Image 1 (cartoon, one colour):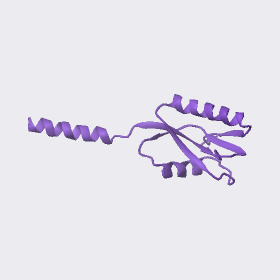
Image 2 (cartoon, one colour; image 1 turned 90 degrees about the vertical axis):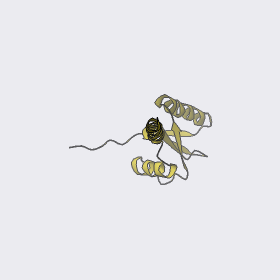
Image 3 (cartoon, helix red, strand yellow; image 1 turned 180 degrees about the vertical axis):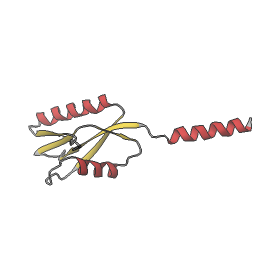
Image 4 (tube, one colour; image 1 turned 30 degrees about the horizontal axis):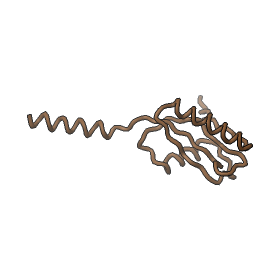
Length: 110
Protein backbone atom coordinates (compact mmCIF):
# COMPACT_ATOMS: atom_id res chain seq x y z
CA UNK A 1 0.00 0.00 0.00
CA UNK A 2 2.82 2.37 0.88
CA UNK A 3 4.47 1.64 -2.49
CA UNK A 4 1.24 2.45 -4.35
CA UNK A 5 0.88 5.72 -2.48
CA UNK A 6 4.48 6.68 -3.28
CA UNK A 7 3.99 5.75 -6.94
CA UNK A 8 0.79 7.78 -7.07
CA UNK A 9 2.54 10.83 -5.61
CA UNK A 10 5.40 10.52 -8.10
CA UNK A 11 3.02 10.26 -11.05
CA UNK A 12 1.01 13.21 -9.75
CA UNK A 13 4.14 15.31 -9.34
CA UNK A 14 5.29 14.44 -12.86
CA UNK A 15 1.97 15.36 -14.50
CA UNK A 16 1.74 18.58 -12.48
CA UNK A 17 5.11 19.66 -13.90
CA UNK A 18 4.18 18.83 -17.50
CA UNK A 19 3.84 22.06 -19.43
CA UNK A 20 0.61 22.62 -21.27
CA UNK A 21 0.72 23.98 -24.81
CA UNK A 22 -0.71 27.47 -25.19
CA UNK A 23 -0.87 30.12 -27.91
CA UNK A 24 0.43 33.64 -27.79
CA UNK A 25 0.68 36.82 -29.80
CA UNK A 26 2.31 40.16 -29.18
CA UNK A 27 1.05 43.69 -29.73
CA UNK A 28 3.33 46.68 -30.25
CA UNK A 29 2.53 50.41 -29.91
CA UNK A 30 -0.72 49.37 -28.25
CA UNK A 31 -1.04 52.52 -26.16
CA UNK A 32 -1.16 55.24 -28.79
CA UNK A 33 -0.01 54.00 -32.18
CA UNK A 34 0.21 55.65 -34.67
CA UNK A 35 0.57 52.15 -36.14
CA UNK A 36 -0.33 49.21 -33.92
CA UNK A 37 1.58 46.01 -34.70
CA UNK A 38 0.00 42.64 -33.89
CA UNK A 39 1.84 39.38 -34.52
CA UNK A 40 0.33 36.16 -35.72
CA UNK A 41 -0.18 33.44 -33.14
CA UNK A 42 2.67 31.21 -32.10
CA UNK A 43 2.41 27.96 -30.17
CA UNK A 44 4.44 27.83 -26.95
CA UNK A 45 4.12 26.24 -23.51
CA UNK A 46 3.21 27.65 -20.14
CA UNK A 47 6.88 27.44 -19.19
CA UNK A 48 7.77 30.53 -21.24
CA UNK A 49 8.07 33.71 -19.21
CA UNK A 50 7.12 37.11 -20.56
CA UNK A 51 10.78 38.17 -21.01
CA UNK A 52 11.49 34.94 -22.92
CA UNK A 53 8.49 35.50 -25.18
CA UNK A 54 9.50 39.11 -25.77
CA UNK A 55 12.92 37.92 -26.95
CA UNK A 56 11.25 35.53 -29.38
CA UNK A 57 8.92 38.21 -30.74
CA UNK A 58 11.70 40.77 -31.13
CA UNK A 59 13.96 38.20 -32.80
CA UNK A 60 11.45 36.54 -35.12
CA UNK A 61 9.04 39.31 -36.11
CA UNK A 62 9.79 42.52 -37.98
CA UNK A 63 8.89 45.06 -35.31
CA UNK A 64 10.12 48.48 -36.47
CA UNK A 65 12.62 50.23 -34.22
CA UNK A 66 9.99 52.91 -33.58
CA UNK A 67 7.88 50.49 -31.52
CA UNK A 68 8.01 51.76 -27.95
CA UNK A 69 5.97 49.16 -26.09
CA UNK A 70 5.29 45.49 -26.72
CA UNK A 71 2.88 43.39 -24.70
CA UNK A 72 2.46 39.61 -24.76
CA UNK A 73 -0.92 37.90 -24.60
CA UNK A 74 -1.53 34.19 -23.91
CA UNK A 75 -4.46 31.92 -24.75
CA UNK A 76 -5.57 28.40 -24.00
CA UNK A 77 -6.78 27.69 -27.54
CA UNK A 78 -5.84 28.98 -30.98
CA UNK A 79 -9.45 30.09 -31.47
CA UNK A 80 -9.21 32.41 -28.45
CA UNK A 81 -5.99 33.88 -29.82
CA UNK A 82 -7.46 34.46 -33.29
CA UNK A 83 -10.50 36.10 -31.73
CA UNK A 84 -8.20 38.39 -29.74
CA UNK A 85 -6.43 39.47 -32.92
CA UNK A 86 -9.75 40.18 -34.68
CA UNK A 87 -11.11 42.09 -31.67
CA UNK A 88 -7.97 44.19 -31.23
CA UNK A 89 -7.86 45.02 -34.93
CA UNK A 90 -11.49 46.20 -34.78
CA UNK A 91 -11.00 48.23 -31.58
CA UNK A 92 -7.94 50.05 -32.93
CA UNK A 93 -9.81 50.63 -36.19
CA UNK A 94 -12.55 52.43 -34.25
CA UNK A 95 -9.83 54.66 -32.77
CA UNK A 96 -8.67 55.37 -36.35
CA UNK A 97 -5.27 53.76 -35.74
CA UNK A 98 -3.65 51.74 -38.48
CA UNK A 99 -3.13 48.07 -37.59
CA UNK A 100 -0.45 45.96 -39.22
CA UNK A 101 -0.41 42.19 -38.75
CA UNK A 102 3.16 40.88 -38.54
CA UNK A 103 3.41 37.46 -40.11
CA UNK A 104 5.57 34.60 -38.97
CA UNK A 105 8.67 34.89 -41.14
CA UNK A 106 9.22 32.20 -43.73
CA UNK A 107 12.10 29.86 -43.06
CA UNK A 108 14.52 29.76 -45.96
CA UNK A 109 15.17 26.15 -46.79
CA UNK A 110 17.45 24.30 -49.18
